[in-house]
Image 1 (cartoon, helix red, strand yellow):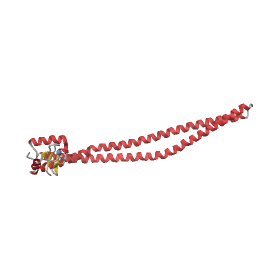
Image 2 (cartoon, rainbow, N blue to C red; image 1 turned 120 degrees about the vertical axis):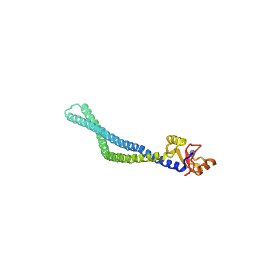
Image 3 (spheres, protein in one colour; image 1 turned 180 degrees about the vertical axis):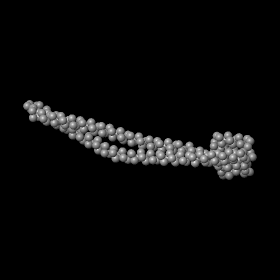
Image 4 (spheres, rainbow, N blue to C red; image 1 turned 180 degrees about the horizontal axis):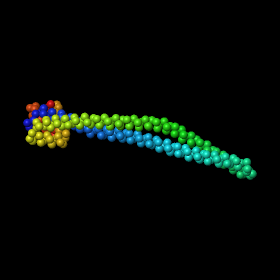
Length: 232
Ligand SMILES: [Zn+2]
């Protein structure tokens, strides 16, 4: 190998920068998707509360109608009380009026409970609407940020790629071929600096021969993980 450790170190730095920028570019759409999912969840929550309120109103209306029909019947029976002649019939009417009056009291409580529930839902829907508005604003903000960041990152990536291509011109022959194969497979993990006589990629100790070779400024390949090790 004819390359120097400092060239490998430079290549490692540029490959790291490239991986970092590519990582940020990949994260952008994920961040947008996460914000969109939050917005959609909030919108679903709002639709659910509206649906619950609609059902409660229908239920209250139907119970109110039922109560009104029963009141009309009671009223009708009360009118009949004056016209019946038989005691038994009179008592039967009285019993029916009492039973339906009692049933309407229960219904009235049920209606009141639904109306109170609706008041609670009115409060809830206000807070859910606010949540939806917040999530919408967040989503738009994130979408704009990612879009403007993407432009910056893309021009940065182009610059780093050009720098990398220029630096790789310092490599040749078998070493260049091995380096390109390693970088294609491992990216920024194709290289690792020596750290306390260990490969800082896999933390395995290197043999004295390899350490010796590194101290002459030549990079070596880690026998354990296959990274190019250089002495920084
Ligand atoms: Zn290693």
